[in-house]
Amino acid sequence: MTQPPVGATLTRLSLPDRAVERFETGSLPVYAIGDELVLKFYPAEDADEARIEATALDVLDGRLSVATPEPVAHGGVDDWHYLLMRRVPGRGLDEVWPSLSPAERLRLCERIGAVAAELHAVTDSRCAELGPADWAQFVAQRCEAVEAHHRSQELAPEWLARIPDFLDSVSLPASPTVLLHTELLREHVFVRRDGERWSVSGLIDFEPAMTGAREYEFVAASVYLAGGEAGLWRGFLRGYGLSADEEFARRCLAYTLLHRYSSLRTYLTWMPVPGTPSFDALARLWFGTSMHT
Image (cartoon, rainbow, N blue to C red; front, side):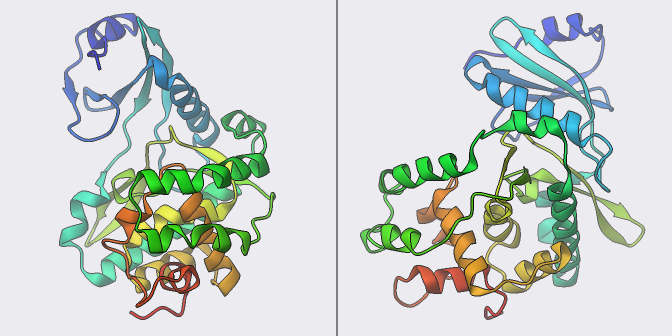
């Protein structure tokens, strides 16, 4: 990948003299511009992600109880697209997670669940621009590709062989659809010190945003945020305002298999696993509320 045209873009934005520092993490080039702004670049092949993130941030500006990056400007320079945003206060939850007590982790997961519920309650005609245009068709396409997807990731044969029957047994309604972040990872949640405790201050990285079934959101919340800890998952659901029954857990696991960025083989290395391969048992372990702590 060629280097993004940082200097030319800052000149276009009338910010040629601002201090620039690249963030070390992230799949796309992102730069701190002074203390208040962030400049994110997307290569030509990710033009849709630039459009989606700009649209999602426009929709969400001021709509949640925590901050989202306020869009300032977007456009293109050379073969790159860019998005200039106001910086969200705080630090990535992933940075502070190792130092948090179990009680602090639980409280933050509950709060993130509440923020996810706020996100899913946002309605705006512009959400239709995020896609997919037809959720049922998206799910059908993912179902057609699911075995090849997990085979390419070298999922163990005893799990791979059970995918078709499990998906055939799960009902995935075509509606209603909600605004989804799709990647509620610790590094995408910002927190800051509020007196003696940490509080959720923001949510970032909306380039994979879409509209779809709310259970699609819960894949990352269980696998990456709670990380297989049953109490944290229950806390997230409590904050959201949900209690899980068996069908809910099975829908969540179905979307774990169908998610665009799914890697079941990888999840099985840190998530709890039943004694014998069973997707029903896996659904209870990962997405139920009666899981062992």
